[in-house]
Length: 464
Image (tube, rainbow, N blue to C red; front, side, top):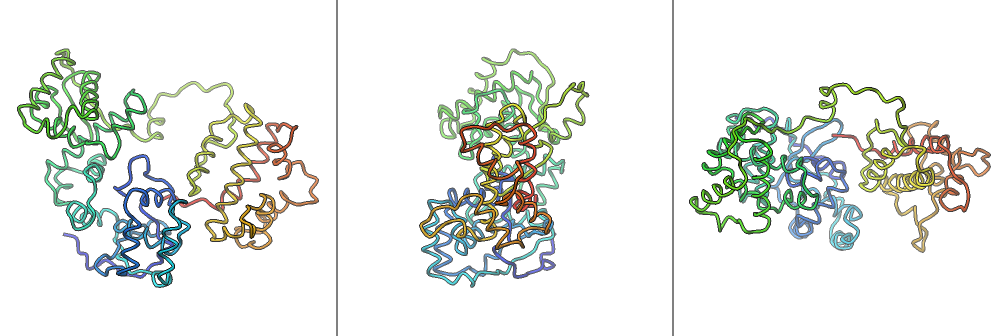
């Protein structure tokens, strides 16, 4: 039994808290996203406005103390992500999605944001220590419950790490059967994710709103196990028919559940499920027995390590932006543009490369103002955004403390200096975008990236 009395209760800055990038409420494609993207998703999907309205009216209930863990230099919220998001938005409505900022601004007019500058929170030793509380709270009606797939993903995470089922069941006060069902379901979903099917269908089948429980009920039926010889072995699915046939059967079930020809109501009776399963195997399975298995692929680094060495290419393609570097800027669009630059050969499309670097620079500068709370300095009294050069000059003239050292500041000054005779200058980059002539060379693009990268470093979020 965990001794919760040892957990420290401390007042922490709401603004400095990080939302959990592994929050079970997040769909798979949102895991490890930026803080801004997570806030926008929670606002759009989880009634954050209603929570904010309740806080404005009733205050922050003392029985809803958030739980955080220390990761690196940051405190990460593991229990209370929706409530902390609501507080963050009341303190800074600009964090909300553009179309919803007004709602939070109006609410913030009725409160003193300083009242919630700091909030008492429990600091758990680790996420693992906090996990039993999360399961207990969200598995029942004590708070807004997770969707079934959220809880399955949470339980299956430990299975895929190799934790024994009995230990997981004891830790989270659930049955071994529930742990087994969660692991099988999530492995089946991974089979769909890695399968060769249309992207649209894949998105539908992996949606958080897809009735995965109906699929799980069919697969967990004894008749299905008898015919497929399906069993869970650690973090692997094993079956006694060819994997291709097994996947076709799984795909058919997903297809018919999506089409609603198979639902929890139409196939609630075990006799009906048995008949449905027998018809599936009679149509798809060849009767051939073959020991097969499916497991989640290891991380890319591990795959590359274990894979046989390929002959080195005589000439490695140089990218516009080095593909060996990882950039998490806190802005989804900027992250995507950098990834595109990492896929582009530096010499293949020079005009497009120049345009891309100019856009990356523009968004980087805007993000730098944003994270320092000075977005108002990027626009005139008439609401027009100042030119890129003026915005950069304003940074080193008014905010030299944003730079880690004087050398970096001086480098940016030279890049925008009005009397500069250098060809590697911001106006040259602007001319590639707005001018009629001029085509950047490979060296030009390399040099422009070397000017942009120091600014980009100023906005990178620490990876958790």
